[in-house]
Image (cartoon, rainbow over all chains, first blue to last red; front, top):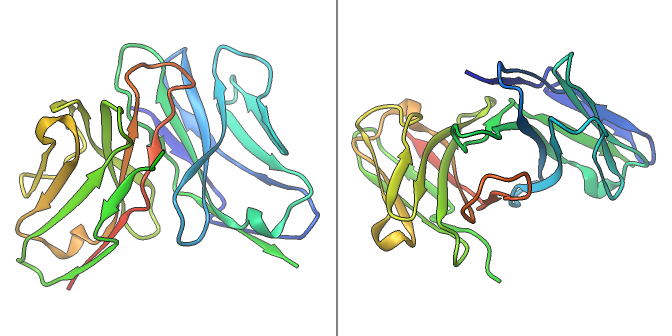
Length: 116
Length: 116
């Protein structure tokens, strides 16, 4: 079974600084998808960025980018120029790409605080 | 286009009582998922409907949980009888059929269940 680990329960950063959220995962599959979701306080979870394991190039979406290291099974999220609106719970998630289950496997989440 | 909606937003019940949670997916989404987050832990998959059929119910914790999706539209998740460990936030998500990277799961705001 696949597992996702987020080792940082909480992170705090000054506004305008760069923050990197860590995520590692474990799988025996060769093709899969990785995601970062953001859940602002009292709001719905939304997709921030997605990555396909077969693509070497790191995904980018607006200000957000990832550092995908397939061999190390690492998928970190970089948020440059952090803004107050970036404060949220961030969840890393895994989904099989093959014929298996379509469910998302989540990490424990990282609560990101932005200090003005 | 309306997003995924869930009702109620909060529910507080006594141990042994019954609670029914409802999820309305985005119109046209055949995939419907239920997830649960117990306080401070990861979001865990419960089950997956394709239209009205249960595709994967491997995450259902026990037979006190019953999920239905009549007519392939909205879904209900009934907990009967509720136990203390059932407390948490129950999320519903929906997506179109398909397995690709861009087949995004859209999440509802969740139902916070507290069992006293």
